[in-house]
Length: 163
Length: 428
Ligand SMILES: Cc1ncc(COP(=O)(O)O)c(C=O)c1O
Image (tube, rainbow over all chains, first blue to last red; front, top):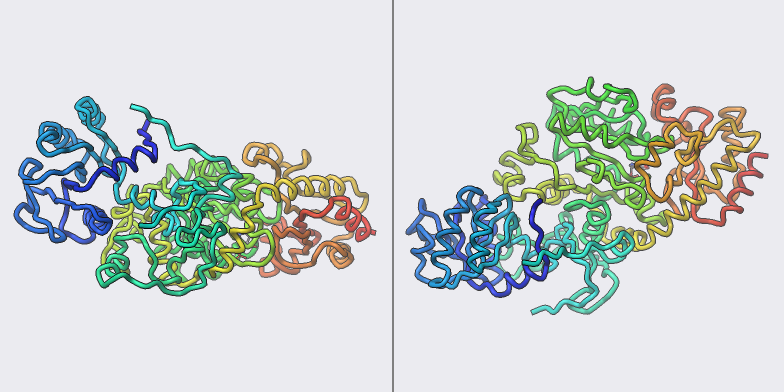
């Protein structure tokens, strides 16, 4: 059974996150990670790309690092744009760095599911979301996904505050 | 760790709420009509992200429009789909759906019991794109499987077919499509999501002529492609339009970039952008209003249809009645499986005396409107052989259930006794 998450939980995570380390970020504009990074930047998040193959380069104005440990700053979320198997070692690295870097959430992208990694991260007190995209979730919960004709699943008679 | 799911709302709640939160700037509760063509960019970078499909937002109403988007999300919600692309008519929805899937020289298999306009569109007009349709009898075991070729890209049927009261075995067709690695496309115009949700039975794409029951008021043309988001476009190399670099979008691979949102993104960014059959915002608004009463209307449509069909079946001048709600229908058992809450309101009957006698009944009605449409709140009557199914051969008409003596009714929501009296007088 795929995990389900409440809108409240996802909203809390997206709200308490300011900086995201994106593992597997790509410099190619057609790649999904590039779409997500650009979108999240526009929504006010700082996104720091992690990709050993492109370390030292730049993506969307941000320096690329080889590993999570190399990032010299604090970040609350690790967003994993790698395959499901690779998610385990990345999560283990993130757990080891959690206190030093202030990591609170492990987020695995659409199609990325690793139950072992999720259990380890939760045992270490981190929040875990799997098989979701933060761009799509942000868009869904802020009624932007609806603009494209998508089923957001959100039903609400409340008037949204616009910032 | 709590895993309380976001609540699942009922059909009637989604019918009035899905896709339509209060408009945040003004607080307007009803969906505003955005009678507007183009949208101001914040800056050049914002424009670039929108054109690259990297952010959600509006560019130009040929592609997306805020009023139409409400209707799209509402239909996706009611059908249990991922997303919807609305279009100017039901026929253009069919064009958009096949346009995403087909290449010149490709084929698809369709039921031979379809709305006559679809038979002509598929059999004649689509040929001009090099798309070939193989019509087969879906009730014949193995007929679909035997028609499969390596070039076959989809299977198409109507859940409840216009006009013959035919109910398709959607699960069986879905199993064949799944095995063949191609999508099952179901036209759900006649049943509406109130009576049947084809995605729950294995359909991958659901199409609508929103012109009919969804608008329900005979004011607005419209169509919709609802994508389940469940079909894997990358499972083989047969769908290059969706799962290979798209030359019409600087090499973007929709399946890779958008996953389960690929078909709906393609429908707007390529289909509507390049073919252009956009739904007018005013029509979207009228259809949104119509859907607000869909459940109540469908209940009434179905109750009335059952009363009228029963009356006709017992009338001395009536030769036969084909209505899936009657125990006499060969489709009655299947209808009980696939339809819930009623059997639809469009059906056919034959008058003793054939063509001439039938035409006379049509012309003698006072309350039934003689016109070519279905799904209006008003009752409608038509002689398909001389109108909607006129372009077909005699054999095609007979297979479609639209032979010479056939009269089609679309029962409205009027007082049922009035409808029965009108028909009784017309039958003479
Ligand atoms: C079952 C069905 N599908 C498709 C269509 C075509 O829709 P439209 O007339 O909106 O183009 C119709 C119209 O009669 C229909 O009855």
